[in-house]
Length: 539
Ligand code: ADP
Image 1 (cartoon, helix red, strand yellow):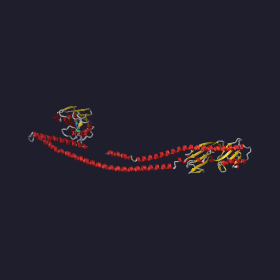
Image 2: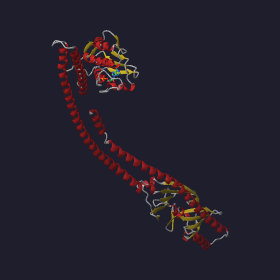
Image 3: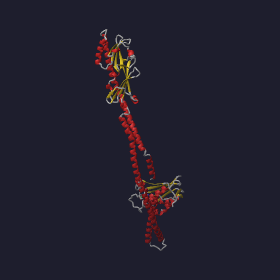
């Protein structure tokens, strides 16, 4: 009982860990989910990157070949005549501009950089191109432009100026979070052009990139076959794109985190609260149960004590019955007729049976109350066994039963002499009851090694079924035999014997090969008293 409650207290000590574990579980669950989504977005953006790359390469290819076509037609135009006038050039260029309105300017420059023709900026004619546009990027008529050049067959060059966003198609902006920058490869990554899709409205103003955006940026380079004007190198157009879906502050991720954090606090709190209420209820119930248990134990104890008292009082009237029977039988009070003698003998033997029964009942009550004590002393076990057998000699003789003994001499044992006699008597009486007259045989042996003594009582009586063997030592248990016994019995003898032997620190058990195969009872006793922990002086 007390052990049980200790265990419960230990459990409740750690119960508060449960909500903490649930909280940690939810937090880690949220973080894992968040990371999963983040990872998914990363993968999405990777595949997205390839897609954008393909689109941009396509656009640049088309734009490049268009510029190439324009330059080819200019070359063709100049080869058609030796002396092209500025007006003719303007007329020709105007036609090109009407089918390519995105162009900023077309110029023809000499080897020494002097501008020979220019449209629509005719005021540039005669100027030195490098002096006019000393660095890149440049502006023509207030418009940011890139100048791409194509060689002509006569060492002159065609310069076609295009706006910076010439190589960015607005169709490439796939989501509302999308931003894109085109950097100049020639001038230390100067931003040539920026574009931002703001809720479906495309803005081309200066777009600010946050640190986070710059970290999430996807970069790819596309080489063109066009040449910059200051250094004769191919343009390497560098695009940076950024998709806001990657950002941790997008609404879905934020909502997820908030729900996770709230539930990681609220759910453990609710669990803790419900748990507390349940524990309180259990505590109240177990208190009631404990109280009821105590009451029941008290009632049982009073009842047991009352029964013991009654049983004890029952013994008293037997004393005068027995002693007066003895007095009458001894003829001290006058001679009795044989018939009277017979009846008084019956009175005496019935009184003896009643006394045995009361003694067994008293002993088993004492065991129940934990009040069966041993009176230990050093004894000669060989003598105890021998004397007990001798006591029953008259009964053995009446039934004409063969007795075989094999008792080792002088075995010293610390034990309660009376109690051991009681156990052996009980066994002998049982055997006597269950063997048949004249045919019956009982063998009793006593052996010992240094540590234990072993008493064996074997009979050739009615035997016991194997599945009954363990139950014999249970209080009030009686095997149902067909054979009627000399006297009824109580089913207490072996139970009391068992408790006595256990108190001695010994063992008692029975063996039988079954019905009509006889029974053997074994008693094992430790020789020294160090094992007899429960033994105390009987009060
Ligand atoms: P009882 O007072 O009935 O003899 P015991 O506790 O001494 O009570 O024995 C319990 C039961 O065990 C008996 O009723 C009997 O059925 C069985 N028993 C005990 N000893 C023997 C034996 N030697 N042979 C067969 N059965 C036995």
